[in-house]
Length: 113
Length: 141
Image 1 (cartoon, one colour):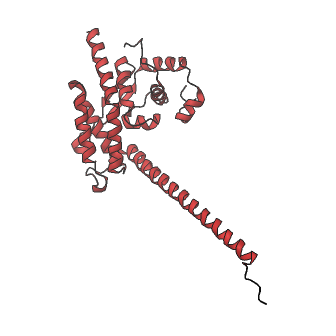
Image 2: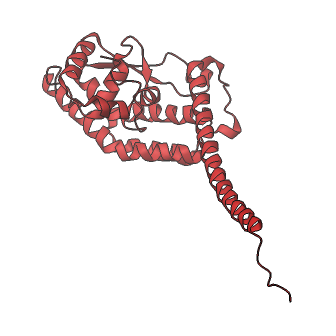
């Protein structure tokens, strides 16, 4: 699965990409992305792993000391510059009925693209 | 001669009205219960977002009422053992961070267990994605 092949554009994958494309420079952690895409928790991690494997997404640890912060570090995700282009193209190509997207996530339907 | 007693028409109507009113009250009570639980959820969501927006505002010492569920944490720690060795520490930290966020947002231990359960359901998919990535990077190398 390389950059050209790309991930399978399932509905949850589309929702994750639309949430990320809404502000491509913004880094989001797993739960935040789950909220933005309005998906069930746990759904985003396999998707992010696939997108990361394709080179569409990059991730990094939050720059805090867990002991001082009193909580574990978050893992932040962001679309790569190439990933933004690939995602825009891929989302334009898929034909998901707008009403279905609107029902799944009204905030993202017709917004990001 | 005395006439047999019959309920006055007004009284009958009043009784029917009272009956209807009772039914309406029961429905209103059910609606109020639904609204209350929706408000509880909204409150938890608000707390979650306000904490997510201001990480510096959080206490370094977790509130006893908002502690991470030990059972959920145990599930997550054991769950990552199903992942390839190279990814275990990453996802253990990532998943425990999520539980910590949920606890800080005021979600109950049951809700945290639900989150751990949903992570469990998806763990095979995550494992498959990680293994595919590893194979692809090995081929490229």
